[in-house]
Length: 88
Image 1 (tube, rainbow, N blue to C red):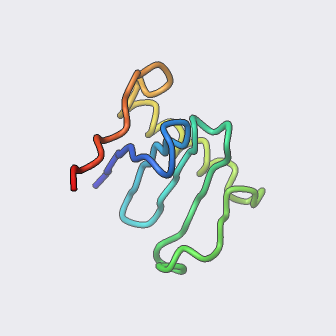
Image 2 (image 1 turned 90 degrees about the vertical axis):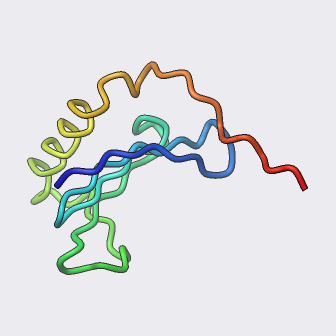
Image 3 (image 1 turned 60 degrees about the vertical axis):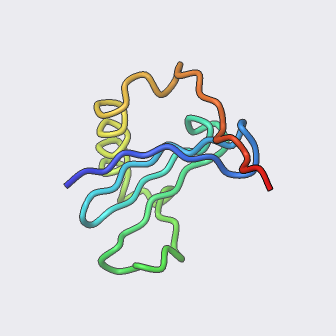
């Protein structure tokens, strides 16, 4: 199973693109310019250890980026607006 999502954080410039498999979750913030996260959900379901800079995960990181590119090829150029604020 592969899940690909986009979400907004605090502002439109903080857009996260994410791909999730049964074991791994990879997230890029602002297309990787603001950082990335890689978590092993079998060993760290609470997502406390970011493995993105671990050399032993370099190939996996490329595979996760490829999954993100394959399943959301236009994410680099998509013009999206943040969700409208709910009226009180």
